[in-house]
Amino acid sequence: MRNAFAKTVVTMAEQDPRVVLLSADIGNRLFDDYKSKFPDRFFNAGVAESNMISMAAGLAMNGMRPICYTITPFITARCLEQIRVDVCYHEQPVIIVGCGAGLSYASLGATHHSCEDIAMLRCLPRMNVVCPGDAHEVAAAIPAALAVNQPVYLRIGKKGEPLVHASVPPLEIGRALIVRPGRDVCLISTGNMLPVADEVSVIMRQRGVSVQVVSCHTIKPLDQTMLHDAFSRFGLVVTVEEHSLIGGLGSAIAEWSADHPHPSVRLLRLGTDDAFVHGVGSQASAREKQGLTAEAIVTRLEQTRITVARWPRNKRASA
Amino acid sequence: MTTPAQAEQYDAIARELRARVVQMSCESKAPHLGSSLSCIDILVAAYWGVFSIDPTQPDAVERDRVILSKGHAAAALYATLAKRGFFPETWLNTFAADGSRLPEQPAPPGRDSVPGIEAATGSLGHGLSIGIGMALAGRINQRSYRVGVILSDGECNEGSVWEAAMFAASQKLHQLVAVVDFNKWQATGRSEDVMHLSPMVDKWRAFGWHTHEVDGHDIEALIHAMNDTHADKPTCVIAHTVKGKGVSFMEDDNNWHYRIPTDLELRDAQIELGVA
Image (cartoon, rainbow over the protein chains, first blue to last red):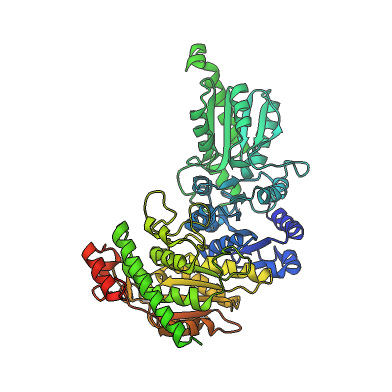
């Protein structure tokens, strides 16, 4: 996803002379092409994220379209107040790109993990929260984020994630993508869990269960049409994210479902625990600990399907 | 060079603005009077003597940008903007009132704000960085406008101020001028006791800025310093000021960070300032 971002941002800068890229001393060599083409529109802001965000707001207030980039916790939690006041309160079209979604940087330890960022950014007024599911979605999300002309938080992975889409999909902020249609279970994924969600659907199909896979790349604003459809057609709706169950996609959809009750639907939320992930390990091993592998998710789905099937008919109808 | 007639005019404006902010605080019961009084001369220097602005065209692309980063002194800024002609002085009577466009700290430019406000401030340590962004936008678009940012000494507690200071110097932002209203107090104590700020001018110089140290109540000296810039460095003017300046019983008394003047005190202040 990182490379797709670096490549797309060059195209954006070619098309739009207002685009300015700011990086907080990260992405060594990543932006060489951009820097050689637009040296006056690139700033290494140093290891100083608060200043970077406020500067971006100042650039935007004077007609530019800044894109800020660094590792996720440092561009969200570290400078949250600058995002809140200078970007959101002033309604400035600053794009904040966090690299290393969730447990992408698992081996660097919890300082570099980011399982709280969606929660923090989602509650900021006027902020859009976008978590592309693969490199093709990243390529589509950047022009879409520029087009909304509002504050956008773009949460991307690192590099080498599997591709789910065959090509760059038509992506609109606030409009989820049905990656794989299905009948029995609706699996709504956000961000870098999309390849895992897709794998789950393949395994389940072999077991005779049809799983619809949705890439809910925009967590704010939520795609209400997609949700109405999911909660009307499916008895089991599952959310999956590499993020805490507090405040992320699952929370957002649980909030939505509280406001739009569908009593006969079971909502199952899968994400990370309310705990720091301790111990040395890769992203794969961290996901294993958190039950976020395809196999673990399949097990949870099957268990939950049994429970839902045992619901008394009257409970399902009138609960 | 300021002519004697101009100097006299600036002095009269400063006295009028001081009386106005005391009245605004008294009538609205809004605090931060001491902080407002300490930066009046800096604002007069900035809006009358240094920056190129046209109150009839507050959004002109080539205008100089001025940010009062110490947003708690908003009353001083509003009185200045009104006197300078950005909006009617009668609007000042609505300061901090329900439904007013003059909140106790500046709102973002737009429907809830008044002409002349470049950014919502009040959370300290933001204005200098925003100003850098504005200066960079000017440089990218090959415009020659300048950016002025007025900070408080207490504000210099914020780490983000020093992030901004380092970055502006690395970018050689000669069009950026910061003025520190160094009144030696912050909300609850002597600024030097709370955070070791001294030597203030050496700090900015060490961070790569072209610096001046002036009497922050000498308008001519302020104008000269803010205009005496460096080709490859941003400029920082350390303005030595007195909190509560201009009203004898408020001067250097930090109670006036929060205290609200009584009607009698307002009257006394007006007499002292010669505008009663």
